[in-house]
Image (cartoon, rainbow, N blue to C red; front, top):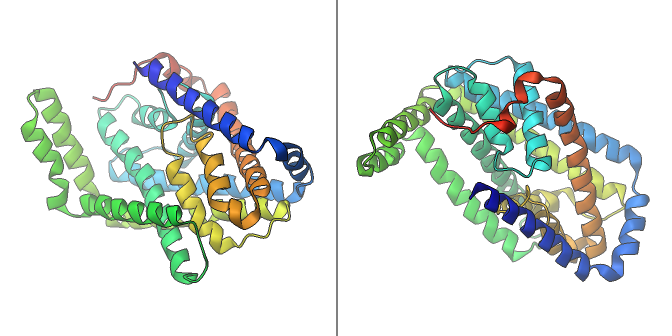
Length: 322
């Protein structure tokens, strides 16, 4: 079943890319020329920004792991962040980057569920700060026109993020896990739900860790958006940084839909949300440059994975939460 789902994600990505290429078929040569003429210095600068952003994300994850008494060196957490990115982009398996990070971070300890909780919350804080940036951009530039679908997606994610933060900081809201526990018939499931409640509720007593994780995440998100802005400048595209702050969170959100790490969906989002502003050919070229920069940084994770023997058994084993 897992393999079927993996193949389905690959099929969705290929199908969406094929449709997008077909729609843009008359502009492909022009898009190629746009990419060839891109400023190479700005592309290198964007690669540097995404690396710095990922290092900041590593510090974010370390704070969340420390709150669960799962202590790793920052070097190992940075390695895991890059390896996770590699798995997300280059390994079309049922084992995603987050699973790899959580599996290795838990090590031989008995805190696998707590570690998976920390990694899951790390991902959610990334999404939440993504939306915060967009909301802030909407407040600053209320008169600037933007795709209506972008507004809907940002609003929906803002509500979902508020509910998630309530679960972390409000003990009564977190009791939703206990409600499911009482409904469960298996003692094993009941035990895991109780531990999940305890692990989630633990962050209420470590608000300083959440605070540090949030500002690190916000800084990283702004760097990622500015990286996209540099890429837009590299192809001489006239698009404001504020518009990208509004639009890219929606692109990132829809990229979470079933696909090969957003491939196909993300590129369609660039063209659909930014095409009317910067031209569809420029928007498609920007999406391909964005993909290229992301993949090039992911290669670093592959290199780390290649030379760190302790990671290699992960792709051959079944990951279970105990």
